[in-house]
Each structure stands twice: as structure tokens, then as C-alpha cells.
Length: 635
Image (cartoon, rainbow, N blue to C red):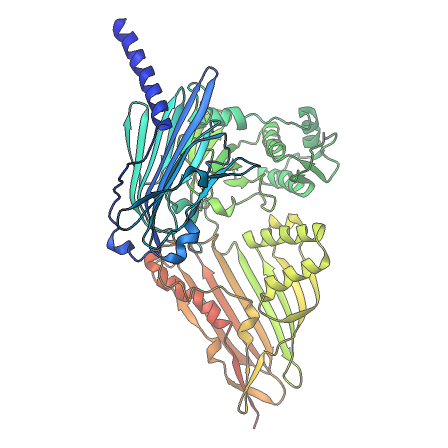
């Protein structure tokens, strides 16, 4: 018994010591920092130290979080001074009290200049304290630390990677009366002592943002979650049953939901037909309550267009499936561009995506994705792992989200081009069709513009989408085909037919020859001319296929001299089922030149080791837009 009492006193003493330790934190009188590696000496600035400490205290009537930030940066180039010499003492945006704030400049000769406290300014409105380092020169080290007190936060994200290198990063957490859990990037190493844990990383390279990369996921960061013992509701075995296994409603009753199901007149249809009927009605007739809007009680769910909270819509799906005895699983996924679903816990700071999985059909219902019909999951989760929960047997499973094939999403155009008699202007009749993810996104996007914007906005959208923003054209008229949501289930193309006149000439004279820039007809294309090196793998949104056909009326009195620039063939090596390619062909038939393009991306991931091959294919499409047919007068 005496030993037990002694242990309790030791434990309480350690709590108090950590609480007091963070309050009394100070810097070294004469600091020493890690030597800057040769590879970073040409950087405009280098973070020498980024040290953070969070102490959370919860118990009885005493609750608070103390935060400490200690930062040191060496300025190598004078033009970088204004970027780093203004400091705000804030953390997570919820400031209660800045307990301590110190700043100093360390000169290259070792001289230390401490900034006086009267240089610290406090804003009247939000009480945030800040300081500006004055008299800074290239070669100086700027160092500061502050300690704040705020209401405890149940979670947070600490990003340590910056646009300049970080030589030493440290995150410490200590606690009284709470459970503190961290999820850190692999660069961090953790060591623990009693209720204090220290996580460190060294030589974090500058952050490089690249297109088609998992930029957020790749950031060097640390996520933490705080919970009180016995109240951890974020483990999947607690979270799923509590929040997602029993559909409930806030703005209508279960009796109304049952009436809704009866009025759908679902009878002897197959499971597939039932699911399409349910999904189509909800997606067509229910919108989400927007920001600033107030939800209203619903009296009849079958009266057509109505607005509901997103949670009520999600639960209406689950309730309908349960009432119709259609087996389902609740699925939690996460965009592969942000992170990965944790095996054990719902990590709150990361956005999770929730949907229903139907084992019988192996397809998904996505209540929160207004554009997306029953079928494939949202494209962001493809190939990633999710967690599923079966509300019947209360079992948990892991699920790998399928990847839609390249033939699911097809962007197809046909352009009929004719020139005026003087060859200065062109008339273009173009059909632009989309299936798959693009078809559903554009169908929903045009619907939104029609309902919420003016005619000019719609015309501008069409012009930019079909011709690009660098092609000076005048749209004469346009029509839509297959606009209704129902066409998503059969993957029927959403089509826009446009008649336009080129306000800029497509022709260029070269002696007695005429060059006609037909490549421009496929619209603006991205390129990777400047991005020669790659740090991360290439991750595109979804596999897709592009098909373009250009029918050019050869002007009277002219014949084709050459179309070789319109013929391109680029292809990645390796696995045929996962590569990408660009191939264009051209031929003369009668008085027309017919050009066809086939561009395919069969994978959503291209390793950085194959980047140059991928880059060649992407650049091929951009090269094509500059290609011309050469005409000559008939002899």
C-alpha cells in the first residue's frame, strides 16, 4: 500500500513538473545549431530549428493547453528577409493568452541582439501578439520562441516541411488526464519518457509541389488527437456503430421515410434496378442545404425538388437499403492525394469519404457526391484501401477501391473545318462528348450553371472547355444532348454541339504555300516542357481515353502538300495494360483531309522512374496543337 501511494505521488509530481517545465521554457544563452550541409548552402534561407511542444491538462475544473513554438532561421539572401522577419504568436487560431514571447538576432560574428519587449505589438481586435525583426542582414539568424495558453483542442496538424530546408524538427507532447496519440510522417523518430514523448526529424528537404502528385499526403507533417480515457469514440469499432450503422433523421421522421420508399414503387426489380431507381430519385430531387441556409422540416419526401442536410441524405440511403433488405456495408475511404485511412482509427483532421458498398453487385452508392451515380466510387479513392462495416454482423473488413478502366472515361471530339474563299476565316462545327467521370462531372457542372448562372457564364464555360482559353473564336450556337442524370447509369455520352467562327486566322502564308493549323482543333493541352525532373510519382485523377477526329475541307484550287506534322506516335514501354500513348494519323479522301487522334492513359499511377516516357506522351498532345497541314495551289 505504501509503495502504491508513493507511485501516485511520483506520478502527480511528474504531471506538475511537465506543466511547470513548459511554462518556464527558455532558450540557450549561447545556442548551437546543426551545421548547414553543403547541398543547402545555396538555399535562400535555412531553418535551423523548428521545435514545438504541446502540453494538455484536463481534470476536474482545470483544463488548458499550453503550446510552445521555438524557431530559428538563417537568412542567406537579403531578398528573403521580408518573407521571414514578421512573426505572429498564435497557434491553431484560438488564442487565450500569450504567456511569453522573446526574439533575438544572432549575427555571423556571434553577437546576439535581443529585441526589446516594447517591440511586441498586440492587435486590438483579436489580441494576437506579433513582432518584426528590424535591421536584419544577409547571414543573420532570426530566433524566437513564444508560449501560449488556449482551450484544449481534440486534434491538430503540425506541418514541418517548408519551401526551404529544415535541419532539425522536434515535436514534444505531454499530458495530464488525457490520451495523446500521434500520426507522424516516416521521417520522424519517436522516443518516450513517462507521459512525455519527443518526436524528431533531421534534414527535411525543401517542399516541392508538382502537378499530378500526392502533394498533401507527401508533406512531412505530424497529426495528433487528444481524448479522455474511456471516451475515445474514434476507434472504428466505436465510430461505425455509433454514427453510421443506424440511420437516423433530423428533419423528417422514419414514417415519412417509409412512405418515401413505398412511393418509389419498387417491386420485383433486380437489385441493380432497385439501386438505380433509389439513387436516381435522390440525386435528381434532393440538394444539400447550402452555406448560410436554414434546413426546414420535410412533410413529404416524394414531392420533388427539396433540400436536406448532407447527413440526412446519407442516412436516407442507408434506411432505404435496410428497409428493402438489400445487404450493404458502410465504407470509409480517403482521397489518395491526402493520405491513407488508418487501420484502427478515424483520424479526424484528415477528410474521410463515406459511401455504401453493395456486395452483391460490387458497386458503390456515393450520397455525398452530387455528380456521381451508383457504380464506381469517387475517383480520388481509386486503388487506395478503405474500412468497411457490416451493420448486420457488426464485422469490419478492409476494402481496396477498384480502378475504372480507360474505356470508362472517354473524351471524344469531331471537328468539321472549312475556310472562307480568301482563307482568312474558318467555320468550325464541333461535337464534344464525354463519358465516365468526365461525363458525370460536366453533366452536373452544366446543370449547376444553367440553374444558378447567366447565359454568358455558360457560353464562356463551353468556349473554354471545348476550344481552350487561347483560341479566339466566336460561338454562333450550341446545343446539349443527354443532359439528364439518368444517362449516367448507361454511361451515355454527354454531348455539346457547337458552331463557331474563328476570329483569328488559322492560316499562314509561306511563299506560295499555305499552312493551316488544324492541330488547334483538339483544344488546349497541358505540357511538361519545363518539368524535366520529377520528385514524386505521377498520380492522375483517373484513367481515360481521348478520341479526336478532324475533317478538313480542302479549299478549292488547293491540294495537300504535306501533313507530316500532324502524324505523331509516342508510347510508353513496359506493361501494355498500364502504359500511356498518343497516336495521330492523317489521310486525304477526296476533297477532305481526315485526321484522327487516339490518346490513352491506362493507369492512374506512373512511377517517377518512367517519368521521361510519360512526359513524352503528354508533350506529344501539346506538340500536336501546333501542327499544320501544308497546302499548295493546284497546277
